[in-house]
Structures are given as C-alpha cells and as structure tokens.
Image 1: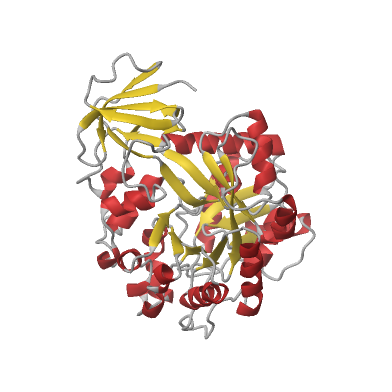
Image 2: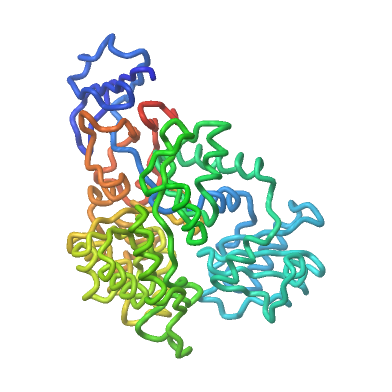
Length: 484
C-alpha cells in the first residue's frame, strides 16, 4: 500500500492548515504545512479544503438503489392519475414488451387511490410495476400480476406481500445488477462516502463476496443479515463485525435485520393512536412473543439485532424486547416516539439509526396522519440530548444515497422554501457530521484513513450549500477512491 501525503488541508471544522501523512492505511502524522515534504510516494494537494472523517451511510438498500437510478421517477406525482400520466410521458424510452418500472411515488396525500384498473386502461396488456418511495407498497398492473402468478383485487400490495412480489418480478441478470451496484458505489464515493451498511433483503454476504472477486468495492460494505438467513448465518459461523475473506478487508458481516411494523406513507407504521378516519393503528409485523426469541437467538450467536420500528407503539415494543433480552442493538428509523421512550435508547445502549432526509419528505403526510404528535416525530435533538447514539443514513432508494442531503436535513429541518419543521428538533452541524461518520469527531493520528476532503468548510453554510457540498477527494483505507 502506497504512502500518501495530503498537503495544505484544514483538519476539521474551522481547523488549522496542516499536512497529513497516511501510512499503511492509517493516519500517521498531522503536522505543519511543508513538514512532510519528501515523505510520500503519492501527494495530494488539498488547496485549503477541509479534511473530515469519511462519511458512512448507516442504512441503504444497494441493489434497489442501483436499479432505481435507472427507473422512471414518479416522485413528483400528486395523484394516482398524475403518476400514470408521468409514466406515459416517459414510456417513449422504454422498449416495448419489457416490464415497465416506475419508482418513488408517495400516495399518503393523494386525493385518489392507485388501482390495477387505472394501469390497465392507460397501458392495456402491459406489465407495469410501480414502487412507492418507502418501498412498502408495490402497484402492479393485471399483466404484471399475471407475470408473477398472482391475483389481487386492487393490484396494490403492501408490506410482506409487496416484498415477496418484488422478489418474484423479473430482474436484470446478476452481472448487470453487479455493474449497476458498482456504479452506484462509485457515485457514493464522489459524495465522500467511505462505508455503507447494506440492508438489501438478500444474501448480502454471498452477493458481496461474488462482486469483490471481480473488483474491489469503492467503499466499505457492512453486509446485513436478513431474517430468513439467520440459521444459515449461524451455520456459517458469521458474527456481526467479522471481516470477510473477500474484498481486501473492506467487507464485514453486518447486523441482523427484523421488522416490527411498516411505514408512515403506507399507514402501516404501528402506533399507539389510530390513523385519522380509519380507526386503525397500523400493522404489527412481529409481536413481542416472536420478536424476543429472535433477538435472543441472534445475540447468543454474536449477531447484533437491527430492528425496524417507525410508529411509536412499534418503538415501545422494540425497546421492551431489547430490555427483556438485555442485548445491544439498533433501532432503525425510530420516526415517532413517546416522550417516555426517548431516554430508553441511551439507557439500553441502543443506536438510533435515523434517516434525516425522510423528515422534510414526510412533513406533510406526518401532519395529516400523526396530528398532534409531530413534536415527537424525527426527534433527533431529544434523542441526542438524552445521551443516545445517533447514526445517520439515507435508506436509499427512499432518499438519495448522499450524506450531505441527510446532514442538511438534520441541521435545517427543511429542504424547500418553507420554514423549518419543528426546528426544536434540529441538531448542530458538528453532531450531524459525527453521526454521519460512525461517531468520529475529527481526524487523529492512529485513525483508519477513511477520509473525505471537502472543498469548503461546512461551518456556517446554509442547508442549500450543505446539500451541494463539493467533494475534492474520498479516501478509503489510505486509498483514493474519488478525486475531483
């Protein structure tokens, strides 16, 4: 591994100008500018940019994100009819006879409802699959239902039905998907990402082992274990944090993923209070009597549980289960919390793995479906002040795999011209950066050289400027993976 010298960089927010040496993938010195002359086989001039710890996306679905980058976007649709109209406008680019795939619709505020008949009228006989932004709803045409051998009264599949149908849909060949994933990781590296936790619902260990045999990944990847692979993972002897043989040390075994509930936009997030006008509280995917044994078995076999919980009742159930088992772990999303549950994250030693870009995306649907409760939704400052460890991710493709977007949302609580939504829950920039860097708060001698060189100091920038942050270089284990 070549030595590296980063010349004329500012180390940390408003930091001093320095030269930073990297040897054997580790930061070996931070010294006065010019002191490292003649040291390195490779020299990068930072031109006064700000050197920060590498950015980590703590929750992404990489195959889905890679595929969604190539699908018809429907995120601007204001109704089911509008979504179909957007789809029709883009169909000139879609080869006839192939499955038509649209992504990113949000129907939580639509005045009408999606239905298979609407797709049939617009595209008679065409197989159409439309994914919601939160990945919890799949809207299929009659031809698409027939393609996967299913019947359904509306063609709108939720939660487990959605996920099983998604798995049954035809997909690109494995080698094509792998190329898409490599492109997506390269794009992530351009935004300063040095590590991604891959929550794809698949055998991520096998998939990443295969990909690494072809090319070294552009970032570190933590391979999350799906529920259906628990027994096989135990038989393999894999434990969370194990470094896999493939990938030159960049691949590790991740946590063990479980779902307690659904999502807000689908109105399946499991809540203590019912959704207005429905009398329903959401969907409980995994009741305590099933959740607790799964947590215990995972913990006893060295796997850290990561529990999906969005509604406040789902979070209560997840916290109760962790308390009963007495194991460390993570709660993924933690979008709506009872005030009395907020301090339990720190008390139980749990990570609150949150996705700040969801907050500006969901503010309107939260106001409609969680009325009177949004002061405790996306409660990042409350969690932080209670002592909880925050880790930020994107949940790509629900939001773009761009940590600067999440950092800006965590700091500013808005992504448009409207005032911040519940600004009392905004967190300071330094805390958002730390939560986006696996807890690292600066660049120190002895650190693993996972680094990002920002062309500007993030301090004092507007949220718009943070989202557009230019990245000059990304370095993983001392190796540049992106250079502007």
